[in-house]
Image (tube, rainbow, N blue to C red; front, top):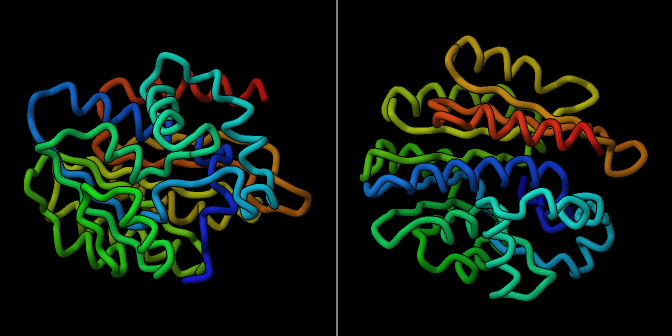
Amino acid sequence: MLSYQHAYHAGNLADVHKHAALAWVLSYMTRKDKPLTYVETHGGRGLYDLSAPEAVKTAEAAAGIESVAAWFEGTAYGDVLAACEAEHGDRAYPGSPWIASHLLRGDDVLHIAELHPQEHDALLDSVPAAYIHHQDGFDMAYSVCPPMPRRGLMMVDPSYEVKDEYLEVPKHLIKIAKSWPVGVMMLWYPVLTDDRHRPMVRTLGRAFPDALRHEVGFAPAREGHRMVGSGLFVVNPPWGLDEMLGTLATRFKSL
């Protein structure tokens, strides 16, 4: 599982789907003058260079954020993209830890886990204001949940390199929800041609009947690539998220 590196995929259409939703939720939650906790189980390096060899090799960002950035002008995600470019250059792309650290406030708390040694070291540099944990993401989540402050969001974005993850993720979310019932939990998953994600989503739907499920489709990044869409499953979704995602889905259909 330590072979996965998101630098090859940063800024692709799945990132656009996931990060636009994340930025909207955090922007919405920070409207209230109450502190919150952000927990992320699989942080990656937090900040990416779209001119790096990994990104250039796959060209996924070229078909992703580089093609659709204009969709987000005047939105929370658009503001984050502009801030990241202003701080790190016009080829910089923010991962979810950087998005969270930019949108959250001084009294908010960030806990981010990353197990890959090199990605962990890069994360320390890109998000210095967070508690960075060099350990399994769900082990970290169990250790900090229920967090203080209780109000907050957990982002779950595994690599799904191992098939067992599709079985284990629902177990983890169900267990964490029992200790942290007020937490917003946002799970990202790939929509695959072999439908291996479907049993996981059905299990989650039975466990969380009031959750929000949202999927968008897009062309595979290259011939033979099995990912043809992006999915989000959100427990305790904030009011208005479904409308925002509906607007985003219309944009995806125009591709």
